[in-house]
Image (cartoon, rainbow over all chains, first blue to last red; front, top):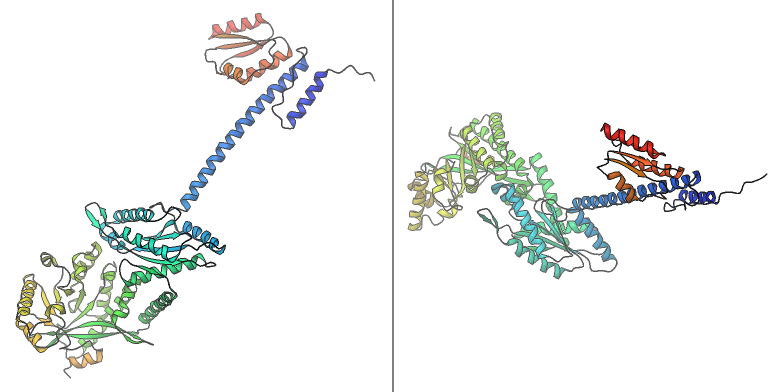
Length: 506
Length: 76
């Protein structure tokens, strides 16, 4: 077969198309010779290659910029996931991550990390009295002070609420203690919120990690040390030691035991007589709780009330006391020897006063036992009556509306301002034992107590004196116009059977 | 303004040239004039780039191109 001699441009065309197909978009096929159809095809392919190259380039640029945006968003997300939004400190996750890294380093032979856990001493009070905005400001200021007190490589984290942690990489006990002291000073300085200047203070728990230790273990140790620091005294640093763990476990055990005690009636009430001083007649009783512990015997309130307060168990405990006291009163009222105006005094805690269900519960117990509201006297502390929150005021007003009398338990030990006395929402005040100690032997003391009583009467309230130990004190108080009294002279707190005998005059 | 663009003998069109052609705002109609198949390819490459609102066409005769432009100029 004859072949016409081939146009060399066709060969160049095929070569070019192959290279473009291979992905080399910069290929251009040379245009030469006549401007015929072959040249037109070459020109067309070159123009399409131009197009393709431009499109690819734009696409690549777009992908690159979008990828960069994604990466930034991811970094921001990660930062948010590891940051506390209020203080911009690291959060618990970030702290755990840093700790885990440092513990690994320790296993490789580096110095171990130290961990400090702290919380603010009076934060709840700030939130309650000055509002959450003030609380947030305190947290932010504290965060800044913590950051200023540590090195750049240290991690400061907010664990939640008012709890913070500081992780010191490659540290030791001496260094960590130094940092803790610095933090103690920094956080102990006053903070100005509007017109108010407050001092928070902190308690710090400290532990130094050991190679092979887990993050959870380390956090738990520092936490345990912090609780020990808080229990000891305000504004102190406590280094973890295994004995603390034992104490904490014991406390944990006691918490579950206390719950059990309420459920299974291991608690008992003792009653102390309240006497009409002019006649010596028993006009009422104060109910006082004891814990009849199966192993440890009869426990006094100081051994378990603080724990109940701390854990919120006090609410259930308080209800138990109220119900039990009201049933006892009912029983005595149904028997002989009890006057119509015989009253039962029950103490309530701040936590109970802040419970919105308090009034409803008291009403329920009164209805259940058939006890008149006027036979119940609720005892509270001076500070609860004077500077309580709105809920406190709501509770106090509600209780008074029910017809219950309110009594201040520790009058004379708290506030010095006299003007507040006139506005106290209570009927009776109990004069603290410290005010009548010298009575009966010291004339000056008598004038003082007389003045206090006059003041109480002038405010339209009645007085009960507590801590009466001698006949002289009782006689003197009666002469001075104090209506009622209680104390060892009349009778110590006693079990109900014994109190019943006393009532019957036996 | 009507535009008569001769593409005869053009070897290639750079991006810049194409952009200048595309973005001209004063042109009311555009006639592209060429002779060879190469000119036709180049002309259509340019035609594709112009928006539909500006009438544009390829011609091989200058007289026809001028007539067409004149008509469009009068019509607008």
